[in-house]
Amino acid sequence: MSHRAGRHFLQIPGPTNVPDRVLRAIDYPTMDHRGPGFAELGHRCLEGMKKVFKTKNKVVIFPSSGTGAWEAALVNTLSPGDKVLMYETGHFASLWHEMAQKLGLKPEFIGGNWRTGADPDRIAERLKNDGKHEIKAVCVVHNETSTGVTSRISEIRKAMDATRHPALFMVDTISSLASIDYRHDEWGVDVTVGGSQKGLMLPPGLGFNAVSNKAMEAAEFANTPRSYWDWNAMFGANEKGFFPYTPATNLLYGLDESLKMLIDEEGLDKVFARHDRHAEATRRAVRAWELEVLCTNPAEYSSSLTAVLVPEGHSADELRKIILDGFDMSLGTGLTKVAGRVFRIGHLGDFNDLMLAGTLCGVEMGLMRSKIPHRTGGVDAALGYLALGDAAEKSTARTRAVSA
Ligand SMILES: Cc1ncc(COP(=O)(O)O)c(C=O)c1O
Image 1 (tube, rainbow, N blue to C red):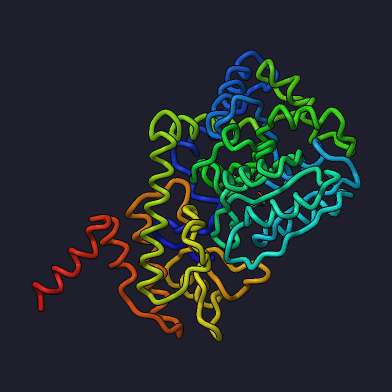
Image 2 (image 1 turned 30 degrees about the horizontal axis):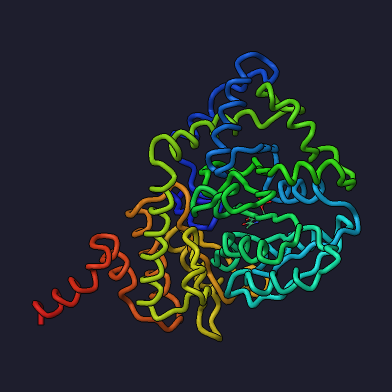
């Protein structure tokens, strides 16, 4: 492959850009994971992750991708044959559903249109009809990475509470954690699933569970076979800052650094506000291009990515190829049901205004080279919002009036 000057733009919705500081931290020599120096690092990472999940309960860190953390959530709390209520928000919810089937659970899938999030009323309705409490868990993907739709977890919790159904509540935050506000304890979630490669600004390779007391109790009775994913082994070793098997030592160096950046230096609230602002600027660009944001419910717009529909008869993958070949930027592809119909702009992780400006320029230039019908001006709309916020529209109107 020939050399391409400058930095590649990695604007898929994860893995995200890893800050140089984090890469340097990962570069420290690997240490003895059973030696005295390691325990401090282990404790710091576990405590820091509690702050990210907003929990006072236990957090587990696996050397795994997010899929492993999904499996851990299910096998620790459920038994073969247990009914589980899942919601089809998109590709990732569908994969979690498939996994539940493979593990011998009996998942029921509430069908969705891939343009809206999990509907609290439909979940409540199903729970109300489960008088015998056969459903043992409700599983929802917080931010559906395939569609750019964020489900309203606190509203789902309230709807579940209103039914007084005792099912566990499990939530996948793989593409929302440390990008979009999330509160494990306050929202009464029993198992939250996370991964390292998105909002946490790390390479892939760490999977997380945050675990409520109720989930810990369920784990005592759950008899799905488990070994690698067994929380108990983790809890025991974690007490002293260690892990029951070899942890991903260098990724933990990186996590220690990214937690400093997210919690101590920028602060999570500012991190969330930054993501909200970049998402809004991106949607303004999409509207100005006269393309469609896949998510149809403004209350569920994702702040970590925007999925954009291309008009019927056009290929989103051809556009992505034009952009990759011409401008060295990777955008997310459309997955399964929306393959070829959408491209996804990741605006999460280590990301700032000028990176977003470059990203949107890449998309607009790609559109110009493609045959996709659109208007120019998306970049202008986004820049106006980034520079002036909501005053941007008035200011643009004023500028137009002055130059007319
Ligand atoms: C919402 C969501 N869930 C689950 C996964 C699967 O995680 P992994 O690919 O790290 O196994 C992903 C991956 O992108 C995701 O975005």
